[in-house]
Amino acid sequence: MKGTKILSVLVSAAMLSSTVGMTAFAAENDNTENKTYNYVALGDSIAAGFGLADGELKDDPALVITDELLENPVSGAYPAIFTEYLKELGEERGYEVMGTNLASTAYRAEDIEKTIKTPGYKGEFAASILERFVEEGASEVLVPYHDYYTKYLSAADLVSIQLGGNDIVMSIVPQMVFGDNPILQAAGTSLTLTLFGMDTETAIGGGLKILYENKDNITSEDFIEAAVFMYNVSQMSDQLVDDSASHVKGVVEAVQELNGDANIALVGMFNPYRTEEGSDKIKEEIYDILGRIYAEAATVAAAGENELTVNGKLTKDFIDGLQDKVNMIYELNVFMLMYKDRTELFEILDMVEKYDDINELKEIAAIMKASNGTPAEEELMEVLLRYDDINELQSAIDIIKKYKDIEELTNLIDILSKYRTASQSAEEEAIAAEIAAPLAMMLAGKNVDPQILRLNEELKVIAEETGATYVDVYNISPEDDFDPHPNANGHKEIAGILYDTMYKIVCGRMSIDAEVAEEESEPEQFIDIRATGDVNGDGKTDVSDVVFILAHITGIRPLTADEQKYADMDGNCIIDFMDMLILSGNINM
Image (cartoon, rainbow, N blue to C red; front, side):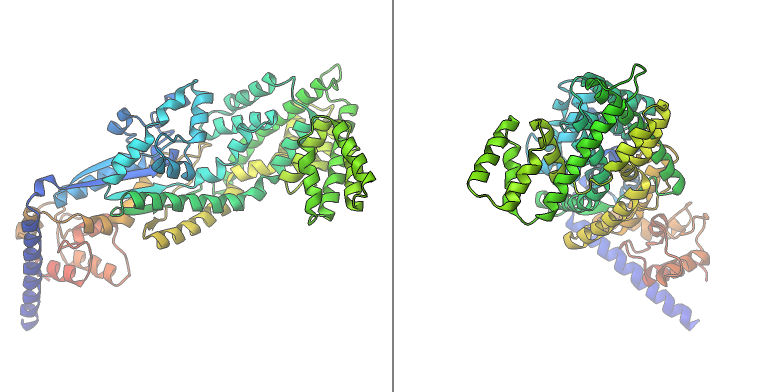
């Protein structure tokens, strides 16, 4: 009996303290009717909800930000779902919630950072996608993004940022699509269409169109360079991750510079193909694309050099010519590796890249020999003068300077030699498996996964350094199709994790309206269905709800964000012994 009285006193004191405190807060904030909470989402196509609506690429509502999209955002995207959760919480706490999705399809963290800081800036890759796949002039709709960002971020209470994936994958694809090599342009275009959810045949068609448009210009040198690029893709990944993390940090800091009062949720990355099955499936589809494009490119290159049989197959002379060119590249590469610390030798290569005719090189060689050049310089000139075409030499120098690994080029010659009279499909499969493998693996789950995990670790560090909150969504359900964007269920999972992670921070920022506080302090709240105190959601408040709170406090079984909402008896967004005491005082123990 004595224990019951003491408990009642504690409970009464706690409830009185809570009610008085909240009433005092309300008195200081007379304008309770105008309390608002603003949430803004930044991100790429994932946060934008790209792919949730059926239809063509150019018709997807999440493709570009417009006033219409801001008024009617993609409802299935996780920012929209999360906003609904916030609105429910806001209604309970006397706040009107506004959610704005500024996620930008095909934008990298680098693009978002520049957009925040630079009026009129439009993401280069996003702009090029619109120009290439929608229509000329379509990128003009990207220009106002800076104004949107400034307007909504300045008023934000919470900003979620999910970026970084595009900086890894989409930093490889632009090197292909917007470079000078037509074979890489074709492969990159097909991969881009695939990453945006196009079917394999449509994606392949986009690449083949570029090959046929450039059929009179594609050479063996283009063919070799494209192969070396693919070999070296995996070696780019670590640097891409570091660059990605740096740009994400730049976005966080740009937001903080614009609005230092906003809370920031730094949402991690997930790999939709992290399962063996999913990874193998995407690798197989990318193989189909790259194998077809590259095999066709070989035929186009040979045709341009009049090295096809009457049946349209590669001749032995074409293969032998490629072999000779590869051997000369090897020879030059080995020489440069021997003298990798001799800057004057690399200066000679830089000089050669500016020549228009091989005779200019011969003149320099003669001058160098007459003026007693070093043995290394003279030997380099001998190697260079084995070329009789300045363009071919410049292509070789470019390959050596740009790529670390060229040794696997022997595979290229072996495959073409073995399959030059075989069926197209056999050649495609061989090229896909041996030549295009690094690029396919980079874009599939097996090689991306370690990079995503490493990026997430760097994002955690960024969150600590900037005061943001890291939100771990890595383990959402993997996809069962080729589209790298999460499906509807994936978006719901991300929204739920975001809400669970940010609940206390959001709750703490939303002050409790006085009238709401008074209503929550009244006993009749325990009569309503799922009233405060009904932690387990069984329609009543009893000792089992107390046990739920106790399990949470002791770490045995943490409450979900939804359960915490009903366990927060004193409205301070912290579930502790005081909440358990208050609940205990209102039920018969």
